[in-house]
Length: 358
Image (cartoon, rainbow, N blue to C red; front, side, top):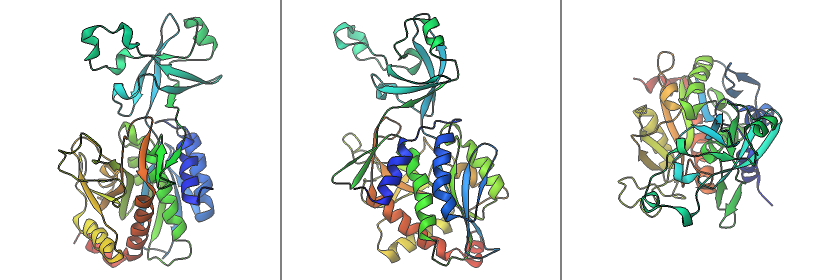
């Protein structure tokens, strides 16, 4: 029997929603947010947030996961009925060879296989070649181009990984597709749930944006809608605890506590907000890990420059094998992140928020 947090992660990760096609995930998030919120607010791209008032007129605190997962878009049907595609979000081609995908068309969805050559026919130079996504294709079993079109396939149709949610180590670890970033979506719901019968000196906007994986697009429109005074981007981080990562200067281990991103390609977080989170973690006895990345970013990159500026911090979980069909993260990291941010939110009164930029 799965507990409530695990069941919610299963449901969210098994929803399909790539950038620009987040409808099913949004509907599921709305079903979680509505019972916990006074109202739901949405921007015109499809980002959705539940509102919970602790103190009317208090600071607006934005908790933002993102609805979309990485996937693909069909760009061409070859004469023999194979599908060429573009990536939606960042993929490494070797992570997708021979994997199953779902192609979503106007006539329904079809299971496809991303084609690869058997090793028996590889030339010597091919064995060491780094594959490129532009050279790959999807096989949906079509006889030819006309057959694929009859099946309903059109350029612009979207494609999503096939991977069911599962647990490891007797439920201690969560695994499957779309942990990036249904875990952030679920964390927003979890925090809102924990605040239901608690006093807090602010107004919470908890939910998720759209199209993060293709340029933080929903983060900009959602922040324009909410106009937050302080914000947390809830997202996965990179676990550096697997073979081959020993040389990485950052030591981020799955299961060793929530992750605070101290630098990324688009945001230097607010120092006072960072310190408030760290100090609160110490008070709670929660171990916090830190990461700094130069080749990636989160919704915080767009939120912190919205309006006249917004103190923002990215908080998440060290996660293995992100941007692939199967990622792995720790349930305890998730639960501790919820404990930590719930406690921080209770401290974010007007005086404290004003001092973040003092």
